[in-house]
Length: 414
Image 1 (cartoon, rainbow, N blue to C red):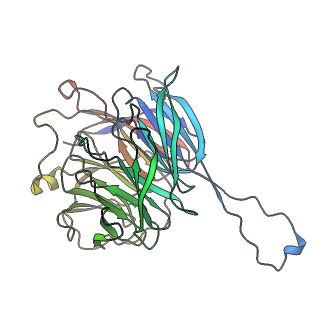
Image 2 (image 1 turned 90 degrees about the vertical axis):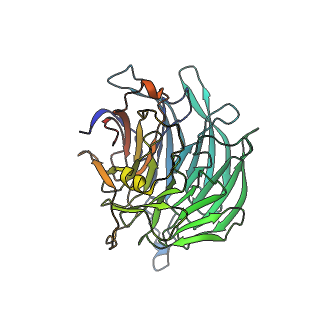
Image 3 (image 1 turned 30 degrees about the horizontal axis):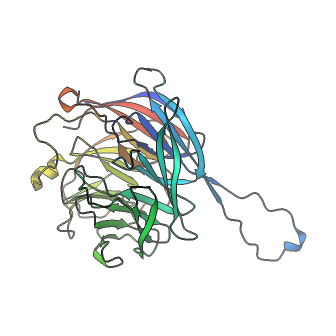
C-alpha cells in the first residue's frame, strides 16, 4: 500500500517551475526552487497618429526568482524554511552538479535571457546562500531551455572533464566546459540539432562524449560531441515534441525519454530502432528522473496528468543489464522533488501499437491547479543498512497557484 501525506505548503509568490535538492553530503537538507513569470507589456498609450499604422508589439518580459530552503526534520509543522531569495531572469531549468567543485556545491541555471548561470553554495551565519560565480550567453535572442551535467554517474574518472550540455529555443545545442580550478564557463561547441525548439539535452552518464537531444520537431537524436553537428541516430518513434531525456545512472545503456505524445519510452542505447518498453501516461511528459537508490523507479512529470512513479523492474529484469552500484544492500529512502509547469501546447492522440507497458503508480493532489513538468531526486545521505526504505520525502511545485508542496511518500515500488 502506498500513499502521500501533505507536510507543508509554501507560497512562492511567482509561478514555480523547478525544484532541486542538493545532492552533496552535508548539504542534502537544502532545496532550491526556481520560478518563471511572464509579464505582459502594458497597454499601449493612446496615440491618434498611430491609427492606421502597423504597430510593433512590445516584447514580453520573463521574470524569475530563485529560492533556497533549508529542510529541518525536527520542525514537524514547517520543516521547510526560506534562507534566501534572489531575483533573476525567468528560470526554465536548473540542476546541481553531482560533485563538489573547488570545494563547493554548484547550481546551474538555464534562463530566459539565453544564458547558463553558475551559482556557488557558501556557508552563511544562518545556513547557506547561493552567490553568482559565472554566466555565459548561449546565443542572442534565445531562451536557454535545459541543461545537464556530465557527472550523473558515481565513480567519475579524475581525468574526465567537467561539462554541461544545454539546449535553446532556436533548436541549438551548446557544449560547455567548466574550469574546476577557478570555476567558470567556456563554450566548446554549438550546433543546430532541431528545426524548432530543442526542449531537452542530456548526457550519456556512462559515455560522456555522447549526448542526446529532443526537439519540438518530434525527433530524438544522439550526438558524438567529438564531431559536433553529425548525429549518431535519429528516432521518430515519438509522435510529438520530445521534451524529457535521462540516462540511467545505475544501468549502462539504459535511456528514458518522454514526449508531448503522452508516452514514456525505455531504450537500450545499443539499439535505438525499437524501445524496450512504451508506457502511456495520459499527459505530456515534461521531465523524467531516475531515483538515486531505488534503481528501478522512474519519476515522470506529466503536465495536466500530474506526476507518476513508474516501476521499471519487470522491463529491466527481462532485459537483464548489470547494476552499477554495490550488490546486496538495502535501498536508501530518498526525497523525490518534482516541478509543475504550464503545458505549452495541446496534446495529440497517443500512438498505436504499444509494446508492453511499465507498471505505474499515480499520485495527484486535488488542490493542484498547475501541471507537472519535471522530476528530480535527493540523496538522503543515510547508511543503507540503517535506512527505512519505505518512506521518502516528496516535494512538488505547481505553476498556477505558485505553491511548493512537501509530502511524505510511503512505498519503494518493490
